[in-house]
Amino acid sequence: MVLTARLADARETVRDKFRHFYGEFSARMRSDPQKRRFLYSVDHVEPGNRFSNVVRVVAKSRLRQPSSVEPDLSDWKVGYEIEDRGQVVESCASFLAGLSRDRHPADGLGLNLLSEVAPEFMASFVRGREVSPSLLLRRALVSKTSADIPAAPAFIDAVAGSLFTNANFRKVADTLRNAADLRKVRPESCVWLVPQVTSWGATRTLPAMLDQITERLAARDPQSPSELMPRSIALVAGRMPNHLVEAFDLVVSGHDVSTIPPGLEVLLVPGLMAAICVHLPVDAVRAFPVPVGLLTFDDLVIERTRSFLQECSHYFTVASNGMNLLELRTLLERTMESR
Image 1 (tube, rainbow, N blue to C red):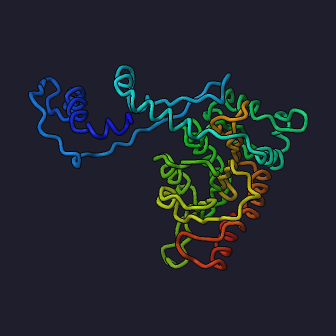
Image 2: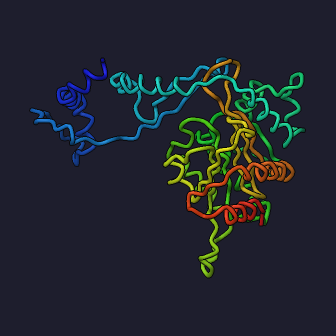
Image 3: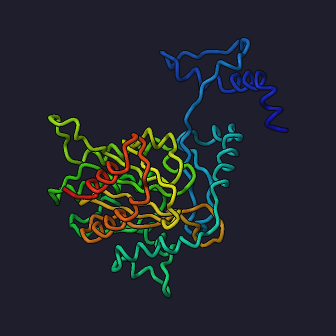
């Protein structure tokens, strides 16, 4: 009822809001910042004359309560400006609450995969016979900054939170740079196993990260355009979201993926880097799924990750570019090879 009333009274609401925020609007258009402008009237408002604006929302939680998240809009507005936009904050909080899910039996399989690909590193996070996501989370948050990454091929570290956060974005970029500087390997493509998490990748950071990765891939051969490989490939369970089709060069869908843990995310740049994260409620039965995992350019860990991802790729059978199954199988096999 409240939403219906707001929509029915949209014309007056827009007039009032425009009058309230006029000083902010006009400041962006002033050629002379010293010259003040005043609003005398607001003309008739047509519902069709509107525009949308992208607001970057960051979900944040505290180490003591990782299952409790709240929206952070400080990249958009701060202080009193946020207080004047209570409806936006409420909508963001409601959206994040809707992303909460129950602990899934397969979450343990995803955590076990971390131990399988990096047994030595993960040994310190095992309690009893199970990997503790809270210990992994704690290690990721207290680990050294990316500036302290050692220039050695055995680098491996814990990560927490989305790979799209500013800190993890830098870690991924630095890991790729270290690996590329140490090795002559230059793969043609990267593969991203997308977790079965609502709205994953719905951020402008995804294309930017794919651009960073592309810079470290093998140069294209202009003499053979017919042989060009897609630079980025996404493996998606079920329907292909439009924002992923736009971001990746190729999206491959699979519907019979029940053997793959729904919260599992794998990013592989063959021969250079691997990142594995498990999205799950931490220290709670039902909560917002917090990603925890590892990031590495260790040769053995990358090879084990490649082997696992190669097995998973057989479950994905429909390509966004319409290629047939045989062509798709050949493409994925070639992609998994480091060059």
